Image: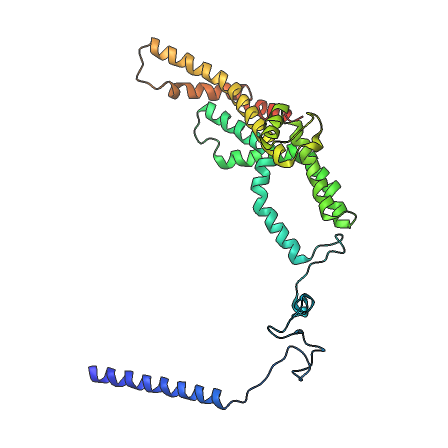
Amino acid sequence: MALTKNNSKRKRNILHLICLLITVGILCIHASVTVYATESQDPESTEDSTIRYGAGEAQTPEELEQLNVQNRFSITVDNGNGQVNGMLRIFIILTLISLAPTLLLMLTAYTRVIIVLHFTRAALNTQTAPPNQVLIGIALFLTLFIMQPTLQRVYDEALVPFDEGTITQEEAFEAGMQPFREFMYRETLTRDVDLFMDIAGQEWDGETLSQIPISVLIPSFIIGELRQAFFMGFLIYIPFIVIDMVVASTLMSMGMMMLPPTTISMPFKILLFVLADGWSLVIMNLVETFY
């Protein structure tokens, strides 16, 4: 059996060697062919060639700029106006999609909405009811509702004119950011702007929006959103804390100190929240804070 396996292995090796020798022989006897990047067969001709100079032959900057002139890559959008190339448009869209979460968190009402909804769930002490997916979905749709006038302005004042070619890319960016700047400035306290302006070492008259850089306005807006959201969360907690205190005092007076008060108070919290139509009250007052 061992002898048979050795013979088979030796035959395979001989076949592989024969195939290798045949391949090498074909390559050696095959006539060489010179290939050019033009229709001209004259290697000295540069009339249609994409290469003006060979490697190391350029002597001046002008000659260096002419190296392989036909293989350059350039983007021209009608002197800054008009339609963007399809592949470039896809690249820009994908880039914006990757930045969308950050833009959503930093430039819109999403931060305040999601924090207030989280405080509401924590005050009810229902742990995961409603679940995170539901809270995020509610926050997204409420953000879309609150930001709809701002987004409409961006579409009318920036996207439509740029698509029609009436404004440049820089003008479209400025026009698109202006509604967001006005929205953030409306929700930002002057002291927050002064704080970051002092840190940045810049001057501001305290009133003019155009003097505030976007790098200062965004963190000032975020601080204001966090302050407002936590203040609303505190107000939401107050009635539920009262219920916890009443339940805890009742259990202690009955000598039932081993029973967790939260176990008894949670049904009363849910009952109070449902009877008061709590979700409608929270969402209504939350949305009204932006108007």
